[in-house]
Length: 357
Ligand SMILES: NC(=O)c1ccc[n+]([C@@H]2O[C@H](COP(=O)([O-])OP(=O)(O)OC[C@H]3O[C@@H](n4cnc5c(N)ncnc54)[C@H](O)[C@@H]3O)[C@@H](O)[C@H]2O)c1
Ligand SMILES: [Zn+2]
Image (tube, rainbow, N blue to C red; front, top):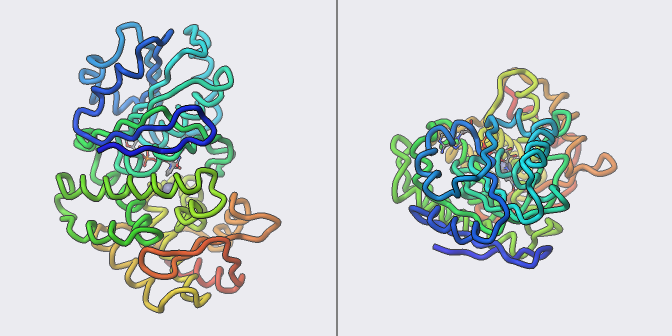
């Protein structure tokens, strides 16, 4: 399956190729390059080194990065830039990312800024990155405990999605990726949820998951093609992310990290509750969202955090300007609104709803 992302700020569009053996397309992007640098998650590289080597030139640079959001920061970013400089990379260098969303965000940001921008190809290896993170051109790193504060829009030339990579991913990560997919279903495309309903939570991998994944990637491309720079429609994808990012950051500080998709799951419950309190969605939608998450054992509540700390984090979110938070809220299954200003007391109630006492 092949999708095209219209990359408005670059001369070439992004090709999104979803198939087994998608890496066979790599050589086409590598030819006529001065150098190729693979920026890889070290765990993924360990699992797949043999497969990769057959698609990469022998003199490729390999830069290994530790996975996990705590490594998506300016110091890892600077280290990668220095390694590229040391290796003699120039503007004709191709960067290839191999790993989950942490690696595509990092490597994409490196590619967008090294010598004012070099080409890159993303090879996403988690469910979250194959359906969301690697698609759409947003790149960046966290700053001082705040998510994605520094970054750029720099779509890769191609996103090569091979479902086979998911075979070595652990179950918790796979389910966390499903959290983002469920978000896409509730915020934008209810057909995704129909496909999610057919999944067997005990046995996720296989053709049915491939269908869910393809439908989600298609929805993501569709949204980004309407609104690359998030001035409208793309904001729907922020559903679950305002409160989700806050609890994700707090869990990192408490050294009890939630995975991104788990935090988004909790955020979706809170923000659906907020939608109900604000009267913008049908009553009972919170229960529907929670039931979908429960089927896959995704969390709907968080423990060990203080609701006031959650509120403080929200004030520092990119979606908060002049202390006014603009919310993306669901209005029903598969549809939502954005730029909604909610009553502060309802926000407090929604936060308390997801904090386990
Ligand atoms: N740019 C965007 O539009 C966008 C959208 C959504 C999320 N994100 C970002 O993506 C990140 C989350 O991405 P993620 O969930 O993919 O996390 P991740 O990149 O940290 O990967 C999760 C874990 O899985 C391991 N792993 C990855 N692929 C594997 C494989 N095939 N086999 C075995 N282990 C594997 C990694 O080592 C890591 O420990 C967050 O930083 C989030 O902010 C970005
Ligand atoms: Zn996300």
